[in-house]
Image 1 (cartoon, helix red, strand yellow):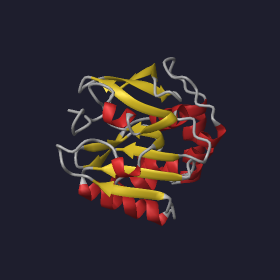
Image 2 (cartoon, one colour; image 1 turned 90 degrees about the horizontal axis):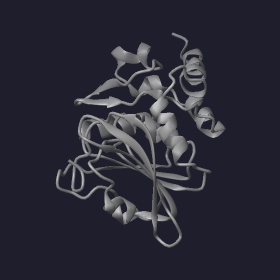
Image 3 (cartoon, rainbow, N blue to C red; image 1 turned 90 degrees about the vertical axis):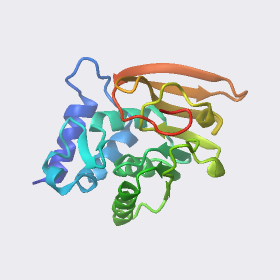
Image 4 (cartoon, rainbow, N blue to C red; image 1 turned 135 degrees about the horizontal axis):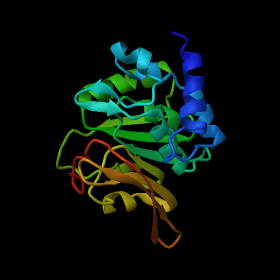
Length: 221
């Protein structure tokens, strides 16, 4: 399979010029370039490699999924990264989203609760020489979400749905920082962006509907 061609088609048809009426085109050139460069097929199970660039989530084992390419691109664009940021990702999963973030930020701190997924993700990231990604395994269901020791963060992305925006994460945002997180029920959420101003006040803007696995831990499910 010509994976490079598949990536170009994915970006052109799913992200830059989406057919679906409920999708806003992702136009940030840096995000599009990152999506063109990262080989998504190495982050999925071998049996699904041929489907890696299709417009759908895919199973990655441990009852988890890799998000569809459009959702990865949209959430990344919402963070408005310039290349100098320290970014926190909650939910490493396959490592694909962390890889995209690593192309766009100075440093990425990513947290995963399922050890086998974290170990596979680390191998994929290392194979791409993305050494600006720090990966932490936190498999305690009662632990607070985030990475307090590395805070504050310029941007935070959560790739799991929460019942509400966790204050423990907004507390870890630097002034001017952005948080993107799915919020809603366990079965259906809406993507929201939180911006913290210089005085610590929070502004929330809602985006599209989505469906993510539940966020586990305090202030999660």
